[in-house]
Image (cartoon, rainbow, N blue to C red; front, side, top):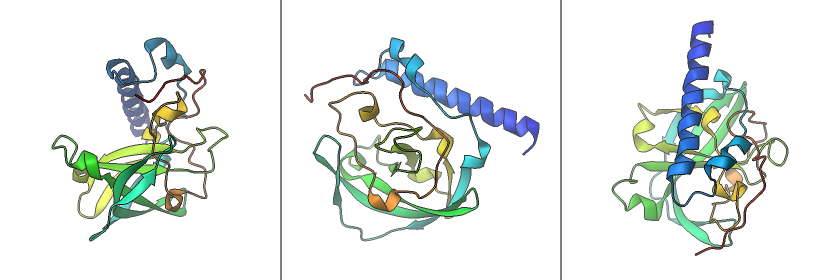
Length: 193
């Protein structure tokens, strides 16, 4: 990658993170306020964690209940299996679709990629991290996966949220040193309404 490309990638990643932080302030359900944003921490933008994955779409999948850290469940279906190379290691991840969310026209294209890796409980949140994708991101059987955009569930910042637990099939045996790190602020308390 040329210096210019690397610089552009760093700028793009920075812009993504600025928007990510702004979303905390504009979302009324957010666990964080503006004063908390300084405790968000990220790995340096690393273009080697932006990869192209082969997509194997799944059909006739039955909905299943993905457990959450609040002890509840949310209904998902397995949407696709992604195969890629990350730092010369083969990686396979399952992509999910939230059944309830897909009924809403605004979110019908949303796909969910939760995962755990070897950085959990060390550099990153112990409960794993998430990535959001859309069905329209899949082009000619491939999809771009940018681990620099991996983010923490709300449970990393506060109690009282129903964050899905990444399924075991998405537990990676390598360290993904990209995306959001552990929150350095104090964990908040919130009651489930």
